[in-house]
Image 1 (cartoon, rainbow, N blue to C red):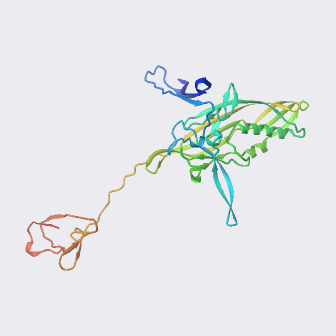
Image 2 (image 1 turned 180 degrees about the vertical axis):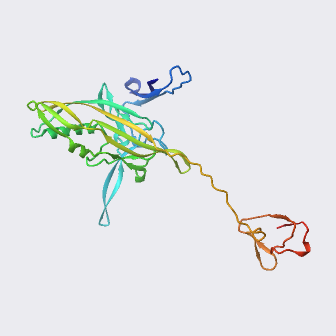
Length: 364
C-alpha cells in the first residue's frame, strides 16, 4: 500500500515575553510510504521540533551552518552569489571573483522557495520554505496580483516579459543579472565565503535572458485580453551529493553540483482593464536529491616476493668493515638472528673445515 504521512512537524512560536505569542508557524514535511497491508512490523519515525523566537529578533543567517564539514540531513543548503570585483594594484586593474552573502537576507544565504499561505505565494525572511538536505519535495502556490503599468507604448511582448520577471522574483535562485545565473552552492555544510574553492557554480538548461527572449505576447478582444506564449512556471532543482572522506573524517556529505531545469513554456491568458493586468498564475517547484556515492572496493595487496640467495643474503643489511670482524647495521635496526645448519659457515659465507658435519648455532 502507498500512503502519505507526516514525517516531520516544526512549530515556530514568536512572542513578546509577558504579552504572549504574536505569531505561530507550522511546517509539515510529508513522505510517501509503501508497505504491505497487515504488516505488524512496519515502523515509521516521526520528528517534532518546537522553536521560540522573540518577535523583533533579527537573524544573522551567515552564522548558521549546516554541518561540520559534511551536510547533515534536514539542514538547509548554503547559497551565495559570485561577483566580480575590480581592484587597482600598482596602476594595474585586476578583476577577481568573490563570494557575497547578505547576512540579513535569508534568500542570499540558503536555498529557499516560496511558501503557500491560503494558496497564495509568500516569500520573505519569515515566510518561506528552506530546502532541507536529503528531502525531496514538490511545492505549488499561486501568484495573484493586480499589476499597473503607465506606459501606453508597451507592447504585448513587453508586458508578458514583465510578468515573467514577476515569476522570477519568487525564485530567489536568480540574482543580479539575467544574462547568467551567478548563484553558487556550498560544497560542505561549513563552506567559508572567503574561500572561493568552497563553492560550486550552479548550472541551468537556460539563462533568464533566453527565457525572456522566447516569451512573446499579443492582444485580442480590443486590447482587453493579453496572451503570453512560452511562459515558464515550473522549475526543477536537481542536487547531486556523495559521501566522501575529508581529512581524517569519513563519509562526509558533499554537494558536487546543482542544476536548474526550467519547464516547458505555456500559453497563458490575462485580462486587462485600462492600465491594469489581473495576474494570476500557478507556479511549481520540484526538488530532487541524487546520491552519487561510488561503492567502496576492497583491494588486497599481493604478498611481497623475495629472491634470497643463501648464505650471502642472510646477514643483509649487515656489512663487514675492516679486518676485525666489525659488523654495522642500518640506522635504527637491531637484529638478532640465529641459524642452525648441518654445515657451519663463517661470516664470509665459506665452509669451515674444522666444523664440517657438526651442528653449530651462531648468534650475532
